[in-house]
Image (cartoon, rainbow over all chains, first blue to last red; front, side):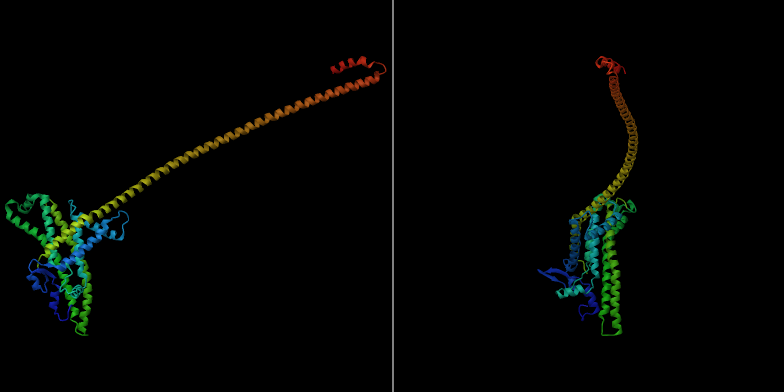
Length: 286
Length: 156
């Protein structure tokens, strides 16, 4: 708990609040509450999300670039071995799901997987550490898991959606893509119904992609917060307090271990679906 | 938890990361992997080739060994034949030489015998003359009969 005067609901709200900042009347200003953040409207930035995402993405590219700068075809060093292991894993995943030829898909899949994996992994940092550190530095809120911010997940899924649209039109032509949207599954006579179904199908891709990741990570974060509250109800040495304190330790350990699976799985699902969507964009008929 | 411009910033960041990865990270590493694959394939092919060459040279070596053995046997046979020939020749030569030496010795012996006979003849003649001289000193003139005795000595 960041402060003993907080109630449980305040504690939860505090943890779920991004560091939302915007420029108001020429001044850079960060919101202190959820209401204030909402009033900032669209033209505000969640600085914590962007900062963490940027640092993690840079870290990923830094290590991979170190290997890529001077790749050894002979016996690889430790870091190169590790990087190659990941690259081969991604490469085999792409080969398994993506049948066309593209220079974009494999690096895209690699970036998606590692970046999301690292962002998800931030969930395993004990939830109070980063907000408390931020408080020491005079920053009111700091949500360290970027994937619990729908802005981050939608930012990626909408980018992928545009890539899918681009390749759909590039591979099939504008007419071919329009025909795919309007002429199936019911043929020419059912054109409005076709269009409606296919558009729902199309829009569902980025929405489900973003919401699946966001939902999983958000729920995981929520459970970490709820577990953290157990120990905070400490009220002197009593059986109840001791039980709750012990439960917090055991449950956060258990949930943390389980979360390692979710962290990896969600990153993998996001990557695999990205590959599959891009494969569908490259296929003539499906 | 509201949607705001973070969405756009995240999308731009994502695009930049993907671009960087696509341009500077993925191709060199995949290239290195392909190069290693080729290296290993080449190594295996070379090993295979080496094995074949080894088998071939083992076969050649066996053939040459057999040829050498045959040749050696032939040479030994020839040498043995030549050796017995030389022994035979030496025997013949030795026999010839021995005969020659024996012949020489016999001739020499004959010569010595003849010389001794001659000597003896001379001495016998001289003795006979001396005896006859003693006998005839009183009766015969030595000078008158010397030539007649010499004629007789020569007829012996």
